[in-house]
Image 1 (tube, helix red, strand yellow):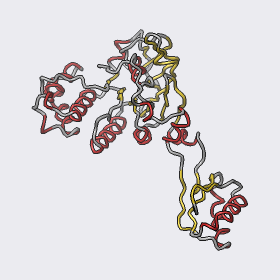
Image 2 (cartoon, helix red, strand yellow):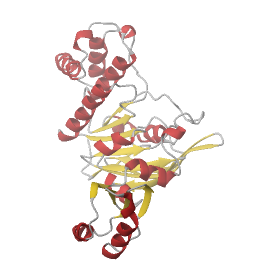
Image 3 (cartoon, one colour):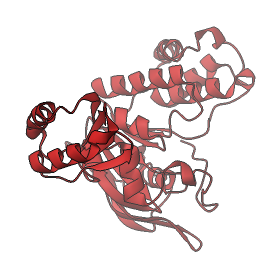
Image 4 (spheres, helix red, strand yellow):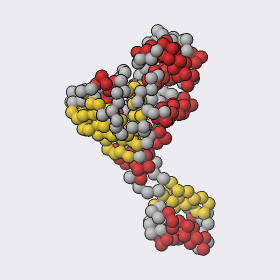
Length: 331
């Protein structure tokens, strides 16, 4: 049913408004088949609304999008058979057990009864829920419910999986397990598009990242490309004798051709535009009798890149969700 295409998702100029609010304002995305694509941004940035339009849950007010070449508006039924969606809030039946919920999801997605039971058992084990398999969902903790919701979206392993902030509310161990699960899904043939407000999550998982803010994509590229866009790596030196700072700065200017700065006594920082010349600098410092107690190379972080690209950190707007953007999305 899927068309032969290198692109799992192609979106052009997606727009969605709610009253006077423009939740999504001309978003373009291209997600290559067989990759993990991260959409990074604070709450209220438009991530969930974008996912909802791509998953046929909301109709765009403008723009177009295709999933494996199928138009999300004109071929919505076909698209729905190619995707799985894990939303920010659980969509399970609290009166039923974990096993019963997963079997129902499997049956609804076309699995036979035996296959649905087998997959349910596998997923319950993968998400450390086997001991609670027969317990009603109403007795689950928030983290357990989140893991079950993730398991439900993976039971049929569709070609494209949308994960909307998949690790929100998970403890560090379970979050790491989820990362392994996402990597396994891609290794076995799926494409994953995930939204997140965790910089480290995007850095660890995504092959490419779109930074979205106020409904617009403000940057796109690999994690390293986004980091490099805000500056080079820096050479950090701590001197044994703080009195050598000025001599060190002159040596850096002479050998590296850049201006060094001092943030605290005995600590010198310089842009590392020419890594090959750093060895020459160390020789020069040694010949001058300048001793180092510490040396490191600091790369720009994704946090710094986000701050530069958006003008604020992710955490600054986590409570600024626009009331007009839907918070709940059900598959």
